[in-house]
Amino acid sequence: MVSSFCWSCLTRLPTASPRPMLPPTLTAQRVAAFHTSSPLLAMPPKKKAPGQQQGPKHRTATTFKMKKRKVTDRVRPPPVGERRALRKRIVLSNPNALEVADMQDISAENMVDSRLRGSILGLPVPMLDQLRAVQAFKPKQGWSIFRRPGTVTRRETVELGRLIDGISDKPEDKSKVVKRIVTGPRGIGKTVHLLQAMSMAFTKEWVVVTVPECQDLVLANTSYAPHSEKNPNVYVQNQATAALLSRTVTANQKVLSKLKVSREHPALKSPLKRDTTLEALANIGIQDPASAWPVFQALWTELTATSPAPGFEKDFASRPPMLVAVDGLAHWMKETKYRTAKYELIHAHDLVFVQHFLSLLKPGNQQSVLPNGGILLYATSASNSPSIYSLDVALERVAARQNRVYPSSPDYPMPTAFSHPDERVLAAFESSKSSVPTEGTLTLQTLAGITREEARGFMEYFARSGLLRQQVSEEWVNEKWTLAGGGVIGELEKLGRRLTVPVQV
Amino acid sequence: MVFILGVNFPERNLVKKSLESFFGIGNHTSSRLLARFHIHPACKVGELGNKQVLDITAALSDMKIENDLRRQVIDNIKRLKETGTYRGRRHALGLPVRGQNTRNQIKNAVKFNRIERRLG
Image 1: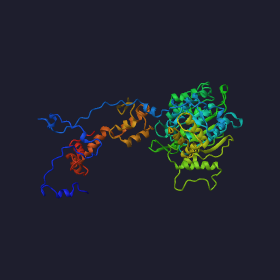
Image 2: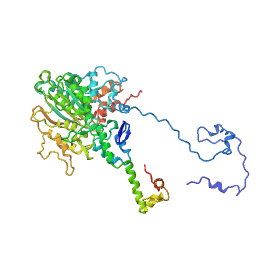
Image 3: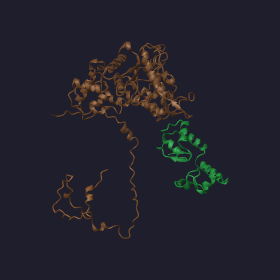
Image 4: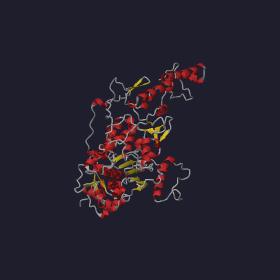
């Protein structure tokens, strides 16, 4: 370390050689100050008042006193449900965004039109309540940045539209059942694909039954009870079933209020009147959650009925096709947070609710699972998903069977040795060919990124909504398409919603 | 307000937490009790059915909790003292019982280990 004083000065200490002291300079110091505002120019410090300068006053305590902490009034906690409502709030409109002039709404005509690929189809306003009721919108999706909600028409959407159109209207596709598991990486649009399916099903007046979040059923947040004395190892979730009924009734009120019961339901507590509508039937379960499960079963029997029981012919109307949409499937493939009476964890496949929806993936007994036709869309989630090895293997197997690699083949995917896969999970996805010709086998649909043309349509929609002040050129879109991992639509949205203002030269 | 074992609990309280308010019931026992009667862990007291409340009360009344348990602990200490064991002596002297150092940090021992110990 360098010494703070100079050695040469030390040798010339005044004691060594007395020298005449120079008088102090009278002029102001001419040294350049380090600071820009010289301390010399500063005001002289104020002298303290004479009272304060002395120490503690005579006869005052000098001990240290702790200051008492002030007792602050407790803030009243927010009312019950307010924070949750804020967290789950879904905003579908942004009044600051521009209205896109020639945006079409989804309708029976344009959902099969492949010329509309890459364009945005709006969701009609009356349908929004239905979509909200089935919880098709998720809080983290970017609906709140546009003037009104709309979805990109991509290749899979048009294909789905044709499927739904065929099952509703074409005689050769009547009562066809399509079973699909939708997978794909994060942000690829699986949930929005389900939403598009629902919107098309609503246009065609199908009955839509959804499970918007599989996790809700296994987190042990809703009540559960053994199903019956006969099979105590199977559990019902009455509150969750009542919620499902309420979703179904609110969304499909128009359809359900027209249909009447077609048979007796001895499992219900009180006998039904002959002219009970299906809406009234479902309302019994909503009002009394204890009977929700038998009511749901009765409703399901009614919706899948093809003919009336004797004596009920008068009011029978043919049942519409059904769309069953389930999101976040992986949560149903492991043990839940619920416990048995012996304090063991309950497997998700022991919940009747889950059992019912998973049994639809299997071929039906004698008749197809949806005799009036319909689509099963079960989506996995990539952002909220437990990693389950057995499910990965099971889905690989589904894909293999789709490519005509059968279990007898050596290429058929097998779990690795000592991995102890969950046999129940593997069995849930084993579905053989159905004996009913209209019932399709389970297939895997892996969504990939949108094409460059579709991406261009999507980015132009941002520009026309006033969110993107940029010239949308071929080159620019290609750049963004690549930045978004090859057209991952969730990533494209993030790029588009960053408000970029071109530099003014 | 719901009565469980003679104690009145507000309806908004969690069942699990209400059970744990009894002396002698902690996380281990309360979660097993809930599982035994098929009550989910997020259940509030107000959501319990009449039968479930009765079941819980019946199960609790069979268990050694609250004053019974306190009495048992006091009896155990008393036995140690009467047989003249080292542990009994330490209890009576207000010093740590289990071989802890006594240079400092024995506040709890001073607080609890009295000649006439009171619990709760």
